Structure formats: structure tokens, C-alpha cells
Length: 237
Image (cartoon, rainbow, N blue to C red; front, side, top):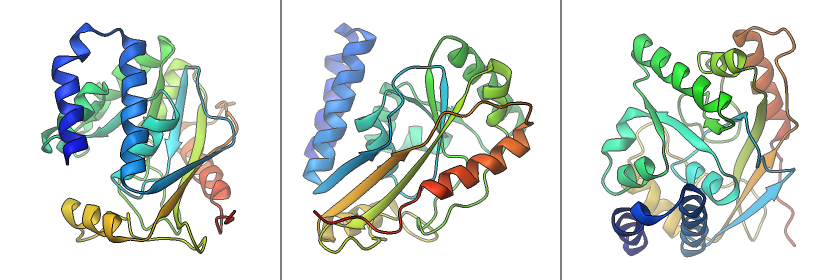
């Protein structure tokens, strides 16, 4: 909690005097420090995306997913509008230049797609969770295709990214960080804090161009690409 509060204070008092690259570096270091406090080891596989334009498509397990990505790549997130109203976390999400979308509103989705196109044309890296919900991480749910339109319209590539959480000692899949079904945010946080030390793997796949695919076909193929990147076990070293 102290670390979250420190992040908010930094956003309010320090960020106004920083350049965009300085802000991104502060956010990256803050995310790494949070993972250390949670006893979560981050293992990055593949080549993280550092240059845009690119649309990162990631499977979604936990509130921790954003922290992992903030610690490993310079991306702008598209997230559900509810998060901006969460205590502390909402202020941090706004500081990270998150684009918020009201998922039940077709009109709002189109507004965000237009903003995404402008960002991609400007060379940005954007991050989406196209399952549009969280899962237990054992499988990848079907991808919603709407936000893929931004990559098509901007002629930008996508990058499949897969994440999973493992027990650090045994290498077995861990469900402790999951935020699904009737889980509450505080309950998920407490379960994560109470679990044995964890390892999170973040695997970056190959860059993919549309190559004539429409958004629905591309979404199906992207889902398969993310699923193919998921490791069965984490090697304990």
C-alpha cells in the first residue's frame, strides 16, 4: 500500500516536471519495485517490442498483467473504463496514459479505435487484452475483434504476447494471482501476497502483418498465436 501511495504522490508532484521518456522510465522502475515487493520474479522470453507502431495482444489473467507489461515494455494500454475510478490504481493508470473504453458502448468503442489509429500512426506501442475478460490462465479465451480494426486502419503490425504465473519452487502453474468470476480485487491481492514466491513468464512472439486478413480472421489467428506461446511448465533453475 505504501508503494502504491508513493506512486500516486510521484505522479502528482514529480510528473508535471518530467519529459515523456522520463515518465516512462519512472513507471518502469516503479513496476519492477512492485513486483519485487510481491516476491514475483519476471522472466521475459522472446524479444520485447521497443519500437512502434505495434499493437500488442495479450492474454488476461490478473490485475498484475499491466504491472508485468509496464516493467518490460513501453506500451500504452487500452482498458475498461471502470479502472479509472479504482482508488490509487485509477490515478496510476491515468498517469500511464491509458485509453479507457466503455465496452458495452459501440459508439465509445469506435471513439477509442479512432484514437488508437492516431496513436499507431504516430509510432506508438499499444497494448490490448482482446479476451475482454480475465481467465485462469490455463487456456486462452476467444478474442474480440473490434480493436484489431485499429491495426488494420493504421497499417500497423500486431505482436502476440503470452503470460502465465508459476510457483517459483515447483515450476507448476499458479492460480494465486487470478482475478476471475466472483473474485474481488482485495481478495486477489491478498491471495497473491499469501502465496509462495511466484514467477511470471512474459513471452513475446513474432511480429505479424495483416496480409489481407479482415479483423475477425486476424483476431482468430492472433488468439492461436498467443496460445502457442504459453509454456506448460516453468523451468526451475
